[in-house]
Amino acid sequence: MNKTLFRMEWKSAWKLLLIFILILAMYFSIMLTMFDPELGSALAQFEKLMPEMMAAVGMSGTAATLVDFFSTYLYGMIMIMFPFLFSVILSLRLLVKKVDNGSMTYLLSCGEKRSRVWMTQLAVLLSALFLLIAFCTLMGIVCSILMFPGDLDIAAFLRLNLGCLLLQTALASISFLASSALNEYRHAALIGAGTGVVFIMIQMLANMKGNLEKLQYATIMTLFDTQGLIANEAQAWARLGALLLIAGSCLLIARRSFMQRDLSL
Image (cartoon, rainbow, N blue to C red; front, side, top):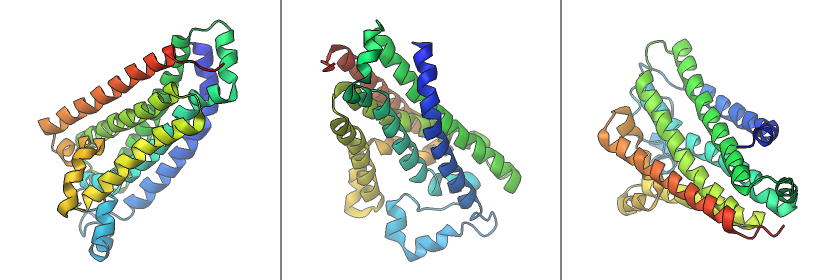
């Protein structure tokens, strides 16, 4: 890994990270004010009025405990959409944009190996994604302690966030694969972002139950079993292993593609 390049990329990436941290901080603070440990979530009233819409965005089900509330109203869609968007933007910026605008020519003309450049850019992506999820985890714990002391099952919440991190790593790996394999920004954006969007849309349809419920087997979102992680079920851990396998496979293919392709420099 090139430490100089890593620091340079982080000088650019931290601004994007800060934007998404502020967005998610706003959502966490607003949503927590809607939880009442005695009366239940105020959002349950919206679910009664618009059950199909709330189910589609993953905001349906009981939220008797604070960790269930997090799982239903934050990790059902918000903590999927925003970190995914963050990783897509960053992964495209780190590789394919540099090829598309010619700046990759400078990096490689300095004698730097492709493998080191690729590994450095991957390290920037994964470290930024980790910090984003870690911030949300810490904020959720701190806000819960301040607003609802003793109500949050911290161990279950940590498992929930680990699952979220592995899901986002798998999605980021798909985007990074597109960024590694394609020369044009628009094509990489279409494949990298489009694949994740299709997965999310399929999950939204599957959430509506009925005949559409079987669609859950056509998306990797199903591997993020929030209730199973809260209950610490073995099956939920096995699904996380599958997410890790998907991420690893995508990154191996991405590295090979980047090393062998014509960069059109």
